[in-house]
Image (cartoon, rainbow, N blue to C red; front, side):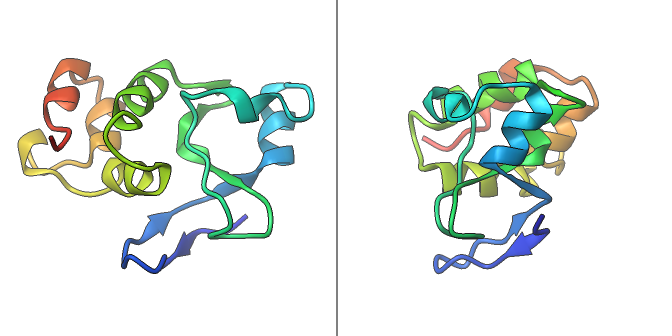
Length: 118
């Protein structure tokens, strides 16, 4: 598991990250099955030879529904790499919290969606 990386665009991605195999084991999925889910952030080739998944998408061994909903919206406007960065960056529209912290505090999904850049 990696905890941070600086991709070429200058974004800092905060981990930990799980390999595809680790993620599948954690959520009790069959091999290769998580690749097809558009509600998951998947970072290709930035952290390892195989794709990795930010662990913040999970709560225990279950995919967080609030994060899956947010990721689905984000992927309509940006790459997985950009979405991963956006979720962990402080956002003035969310009282200075990161979108992830905002959701962790049980605050509104609608406000989070409104903070997504156009």
